[in-house]
Amino acid sequence: MAYYSFPDESTIEGLVNLGLYEEVFNLPIEFTIRQLHNVYIAYQTEYSKDIRIQKLISKAYNFLKNEKMPHKGIRLFNNGHVKECIPILQKAVKVKQNEELCTILASALYLSEDYKKAIPLLHYLCKENTNKTLVFYLGMSLYKTEKPDEALQWLKKASEAGEDDAHYYAGKLLFEKKEYKLAIPFLEKSLRYDKNPDALFYLAISCYNIDLYDRGLRYIEDLLVLASDPEYYQWYAKLCLKNNMTKKAFSTLRSLTQLRGNSSDFLWCGIALCECGKYKESLYYLEKAYEKNASPDVRMWLDYARKKSGSSQ
Image 1: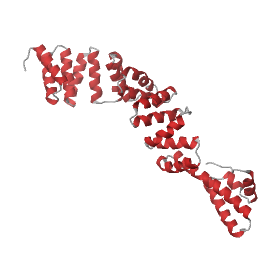
Image 2 (image 1 turned 180 degrees about the vertical axis):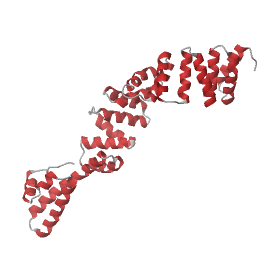
Image 3 (image 1 turned 90 degrees about the vertical axis):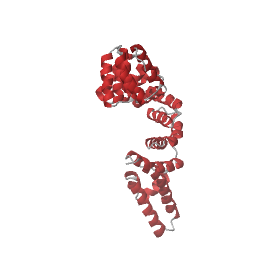
Image 4 (image 1 turned 120 degrees about the vertical axis):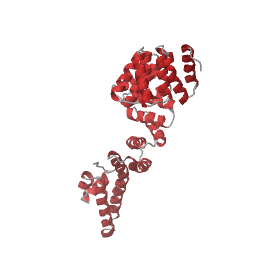
């Protein structure tokens, strides 16, 4: 509930004389406007000669009417009616632009996923505003509209300011750019606030790609405690291979060929057997992989296994 004052002493004095002081300063805006409107109509009909009072009430009424629009928009936003508040706040900002209204409107646009409209307003607010949430909203809006480089700048700023979600998204963006070494600190920081399975998965893959195999294995093991997915198990097997845990890798991959059976599962099962020196046994899995996907990579491993096993095509 919000309360409003009037613009000058003469207006207040006039309202006190009319017995409306209590309504103006102690009741919600909608009720106050209704009361003023009723009195305004009454004075127009019964006291039409008193022009001063008519102007006084009209002035107060118009002032409150202008205040009603932003108040209604803010109330809708606070009550979770995000989309409904946007057109009201857009009109209110045109009449009376201030930081509070712009902030709420920008937040509403972001939360309703209207990122393109949110970006100009967020840029305006973030020029001098260090609000970490707004900085995060700007970074995410740019990310959602496929502007990764600019998005990363703002997400890093939000992360530095202590916005918890920004750590994960800055790391995710760096991961997508294949800047694995730079992604790791952000993703690790995000785990302090939220054991996000995706963050653990990105960390495991990042570590794999920069030869931090032992560290990557720890992350994938933590991930498998939280979530079960064939893709996670394949990466677990890959990291087991890199950590010389070939039997465990093969056992996991063989289960995947039975459960899911895509080309990649058969390929890695064959690679695991090659790593153990079991080239003849690997041929079954590599040939299955080649049947499903005749890619150069699969062909290379198949030819390698055939050569090492002394087998002809």
